[in-house]
Image (cartoon, rainbow, N blue to C red):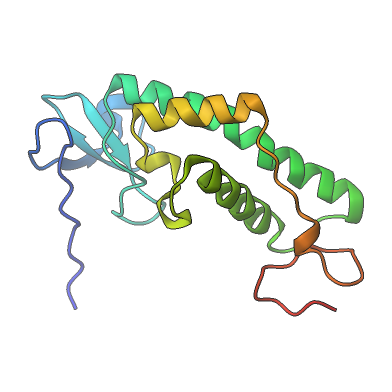
Length: 160
C-alpha cells in the first residue's frame, strides 16, 4: 500500500494546502506543516507523520487555539501533578487524566468526545473553552480509581 498524503484543504479559500517545512513560517525546522500561503494559514503534523494536528488556522484562530490550550492544559496537568504527588508516577497516567478532562470538556461544549480536540476547533469554540475553563472545569477522577483507591485506570481496565 502506498503512503498517500492526506488531502488538506484550506478552510478559508478551499484550495489545497502545500506540505512544506515549518522553516517557512517559524524560521526554524520543527517538522512538516500544511500551508496555505494566500491565507497565511497552516497546521503542523503529528510527529513522524504527515497527518495534520488539526485544521489549518489563520492568525486569529492560532491566537485563540493558544488561549484555549493555555486555559485547558493547566487543568489536566495540575491533576497529573497532584496524582503523582499522591501515589507516584505510573504508566498511562497522563493519558488517562487528559482523556477524562477532554471528556468533561466535550460534555460542557455539548459535542461528542471524538470531536473534542482544540486543534479542530474554530474561533468561537476556542472562546467557549476559555470561558468554561475560567468558570471552573471540574474533572472528577474517583470513578476511575482501582478498588484499592491507589491508581487511576482506564474505563475498560479491571478494577482490583
